[in-house]
Length: 240
Image (tube, rainbow, N blue to C red; front, side, top):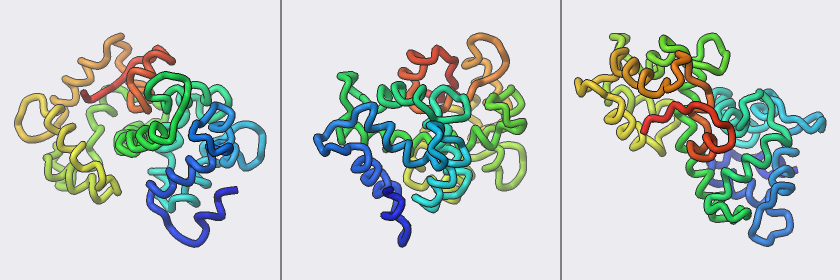
C-alpha cells in the first residue's frame, strides 16, 4: 500500500503523481495497461468490493495529499467519467483512453504526467461546478450557471472582476493555474465591461445549451472534451 509513503509528510501534487505512476507501472516497463491502472484504484477501494465510492476516494485522497475535502471531491468527479457516483471497472477503459494521449493503446510515463498536469488545471472548474450545483443533482440550471463565479464576489456586488477572480484563484489553492483564470475571464466577459455578471453567463449558457434542455451536465467540466464527447456522447460546457 503506497499510503505509507505519505504518512509522515505532505507532498505536493507532482510528488503524488510520481508515486501514482510508480504504483501503476508494476512491471516497470514504462507502459501502463488497463489492469495496472485498475491496481491504482484498488488502493482506494477500502472494503475491497470492486467499487470506489466518493467517501472512500475522498478520505484516501485527503490522506495522500492533505487537500481540502472540496478539492478532493473534485478529483473524484474527474475520475468518475460516467458520472454514476462510483469508480469501478466501467470507468477504467475510458480513463485509460483519456491518458493515452496519442491513441496508440499504450500509456507512457510522459503521457501519464502530461494528462495529470491537465487534470490539475481542470480542478478549479470542477470545484466551481460543485459549488454552483446547489441542489446537488450534478446538473446546473441557468440560475446556478449564472452564479458559477459568485463565490469569488468579494464585495458582494453581484459581479466579479478580473482582480477578484485572480485573488480568489490563489486563495482557493489554484495559484499554479492563475493564468488560466485570466484567459477564462477574457473569454467570458462577453460585453467587455470588465466584469463577469449574469448577462455574460446567460449568453454563454445559451451558446452551450445546444439541445435546449436548459441544464448543463457535470460532464461539461470533466477530463477531456474530445474524449468525453466521443465516449459518452454528452453535451459539454466548455469555456473555449
